[in-house]
Length: 266
Image (cartoon, rainbow, N blue to C red; front, side):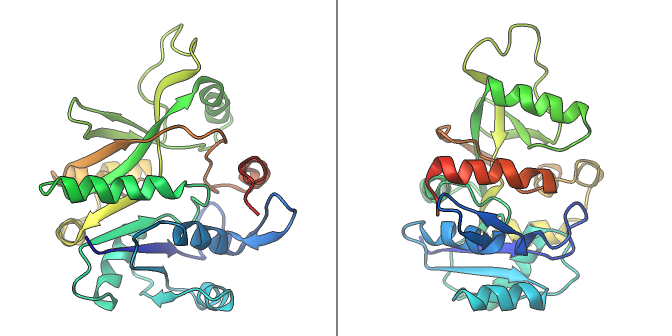
């Protein structure tokens, strides 16, 4: 199947304005902007036809083209990355089967996660959307619990049915964890990795569906699919040795740099 990676990026993030251009130091101490690191990670995915940053900001476009990347301009009316990917479809070749939404702040995502999504849709003709999740280490869950108490968002969790389809996503830790739940190395919590693979039909349904109350309350765009009755395949992926973390708040910079060093990423 023909697949293209799109990296939605906007400058006016409510929690961290300008974050696509925030410099992050890697294992060698060299600093690169977040959007460049995400782009370089996406370029490592085998079998992908093209990688494009999709944005409505000239500063991001200039930065991407400055490091040799490709950027597509979209309107400022897009409310989230999925809407931005849908709008960018008109600028892609008509024979593109799948669009991968590679979150601009998910620079630590292993390329194999994307391959797993493409394979899932290639092998499941009836599936429309796929996204990865992994069992979170119990010590990391404890850290997220502390962040919740402090009022910070540290990740998104997902619960699934017997067919590995999403029942619900939340910025709260789900499911409920009774005493003893974190006694093992891996917890019952599935950390959702913010990457999606869509068929064109899924994106058409998405933009035809108004934003939903749950989507707006949680701040999670993927909930619009579930409310619209579009199933989301959740692909279990292996938990890497380093901590996966998105850049959501300024406080995330230091832990992400630690993970870049642990992963040996320059």
